[in-house]
Image (cartoon, rainbow, N blue to C red; front, side):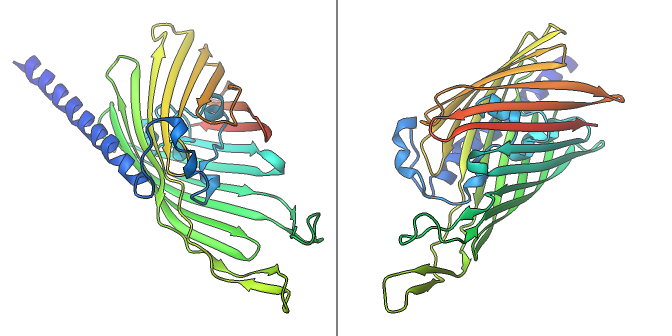
Length: 352
């Protein structure tokens, strides 16, 4: 009888978790559909491109995810979970700190610092992150001076996030991140609040796990400030102070990961797949694979389907270094965009 009751409780718990995951899967597309009609095939959503702002929120900053084709919403395993899926924060062990740097196109740099802290005996994990993009100095050009006016400007974007995540069981967790976002260029600034929501479910001891996340779901921003531009008129300088509202780039993710070679202590292999549905572009499907040797060396490969710029797979490597009973991991990721060129990403993760 005791055994039957235990089995019943386990089945009930698993069923309730699946119901929660199902509800989020059902509701999440409605969030992105508040602005656009949901697409079914990746090739049918291109007309949505350019319909939202704060685009830096969509650019991955960590090397591991890039190498895996951005298919990590169910399998991120370091402080970068605060970027991808807050529910995964509760699945981490101990305190984790991550520093990430991306050498993006035309000297644009993206950086992120994140820290995750687990509260003992509570199942609760909290985290904090700051994400920034800096364009560097760029030349001001006009219709009358297309090669530059001699002036320069820069674009600066910042997002600061606070995360709460809780593991209800060893199989299921949820999380939410609240973000303050600020975008500034020349004398115009836009600020808003956005949220990341996520759930994670490990399917028993099968080696499979799944996750659902909604990223950057928030309020429209009203830019403030003024900008002067040259016109052909009696007064050649016109001051603009009225701007359209800016939407956040909401994205829905449905992700799966399966771990092979679970009985092999020297080797590991993870396969991941993910469907992403952004509110401002076509759907895309991402896949990735990570091979690990003796928990010291990781090789990664990933590809993104449905995105024209990505013609070649992303590749990367991870090196795990023991450090006084803890360990440190260095990650490198490489990707190449068809028109924009190569992108290098670096990650430094400390596991305490």
